[in-house]
Image (cartoon, rainbow over all chains, first blue to last red; front, side):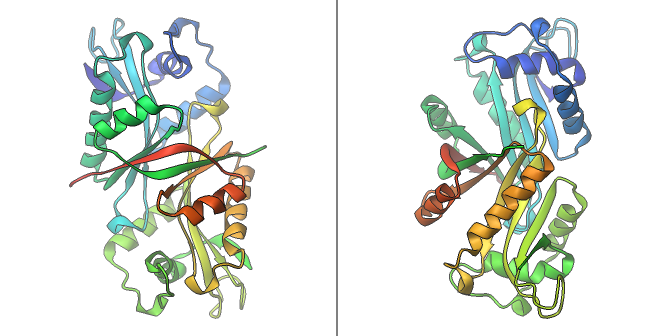
Length: 157
Length: 157
């Protein structure tokens, strides 16, 4: 398996994972909009944001036969607390529907935490919808403390 | 009142607010460490991070008599979801201990949400420690949905 930064070539596979709720979406059928292109370019250009993929490594990194099994986004946030250490925020965690239940999610999260630790982050954090109780147990098994309430407010344009 | 980006000159007042749990800390007594300087410089240099202050406006923005009443940090996160709109993350929300209970916190949060909306963010989000039940009611009154569980994992160097 390979854990690496996503390139523009991975964008269809990443968008397929994000669209996949309970069944695999074929990356070849994903429509890539202008907003997706803009957001991906913004993430690639920002030293504090990255989309990371876990792949089966077939044919090597970026090879034609390589299948993307999971993804997540990391944001490294500078702050005045925690002795000036950055914190890492995790968003958009996904594992391909037909590869769940085999520990890939744990691999992905451990690799992400290790990457954040190596960068010098003092903390890694995420929120998970209250309905996703299986995900909560998953994060607790990985050592995360469910210490906070997560609040969201949608903003109208 | 004035709502504006913090400058280096505000750093003692902001650190005093962050250190203030139940009583006002005198900014003149705050020790500014190298890590604080580095973190503040990193935030100032990053177009997706800002520390914002709410002040009494005495003597004008940045004037000698101006008192910082509250602060927060906003991080604007690019992402592939939500039609490519950024989301705003709020951290380090504080109101001076001797000025609480007068609606300043609501003013500060509304100004932050309005700033994020004007920038084009589709969502503003934050987490609050589960023990802070009064804060939870406060965010719900402001229209935030308590929809998520917040997980944190401390990383050892």
